[in-house]
Image 1 (spheres, helix red, strand yellow):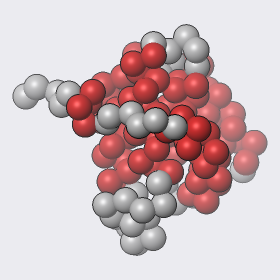
Image 2 (tube, one colour; image 1 turned 135 degrees about the horizontal axis):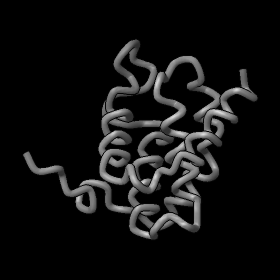
Image 3 (cartoon, rainbow, N blue to C red; image 1 turned 180 degrees about the horizontal axis):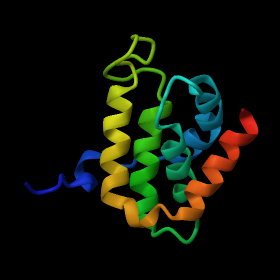
Image 4 (cartoon, rainbow, N blue to C red; image 1 turned 60 degrees about the horizontal axis):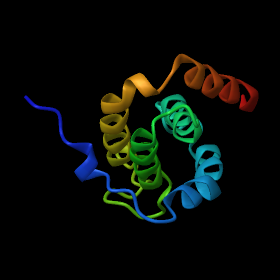
Length: 118
């Protein structure tokens, strides 16, 4: 089975990076303890803002992160047990396609942040 073409599924919109940067940490703090993949989300964020990450990869990661921080999406986040399933699907598609660009340093930085919040 061929992997989906994320360049078509996650089309970056103007102002998306600014949107994500302004809302990301607030959303992370609200979801701590409720989203088991939050370390991966934070690592994706660090990869997306890392100038060493190729521009195309940064744009796709920002598009996926924008979906995560959007207050309204296909499955509302307040729906018990499944509210973050659509967010997870979008993020995991992006992260699987762009995995080589999410470096161990990004994940280490994410885990350090989570440890400081514990």
